[in-house]
Image (cartoon, rainbow, N blue to C red; front, top):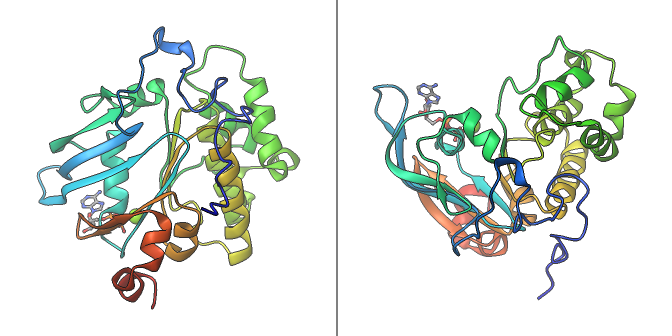
Length: 272
Ligand SMILES: Nc1ncnc2c1ncn2[C@@H]1O[C@H](COP(=O)(O)OP(=O)(O)O)[C@@H](O)[C@H]1O
Ligand SMILES: [Mg+2]
């Protein structure tokens, strides 16, 4: 097997989990529990919609395991963002469960999920534009009562341009730089798993490649990543696991390689 990211995982523990891979979890909540064999984070058989509206998700399952990048692709309106929001606790589930490291967290608020170790960068409004870059990162650390200066230094190591621009209003930054602020903000809580909804939306191909490189770097520090991407081909190239969602349901699931090689997936979702 020639997996270019086969060395991803646990060696560099710079950003988040001091033990890496989440197998031993930072003791913020006072206890660790072994993962009972399931994926580290899973939204399982999710059926959900907004308010009293119709079901948007239909028995949809998305998951990411330790050491993985999992990518969700699919047409506009397929329910990718809705799936992410459901996993993060932003809408009521009508059926299904969300489990984090084996624990059922279906009934927890988003805030409580952050405290449990979930980081989420939503598709829109993911930074405070009138605040400086540094203030955005400080806001990201809101749940922390300890000294977070080391984490901020690590975020600046990962995204050097943010250090340069740390006193500028985030709204003055380019699209790619704003996305770095958003990812950096989420990293400030030292998440055990990171969820990204279209982190490369609206950026040039070069900036997209750079962002993907940084995302791979984050994954290598031991933070599994579940992300939605509209750049399906490029995203599946870096994906350990991929999901194609269509009309709120799982249409195709496989490794990134398998999906890239699947004629149906290629024809319908990858432009041939
Ligand atoms: N806040 C909302 N309230 C009601 N319906 C919504 C809301 N957000 C999205 N939807 C609907 O849910 C469906 C899936 O949207 P979304 O999850 O944003 O798709 P994707 O991210 O795959 O483009 C669409 O039909 C959309 O109109
Ligand atoms: Mg979306």
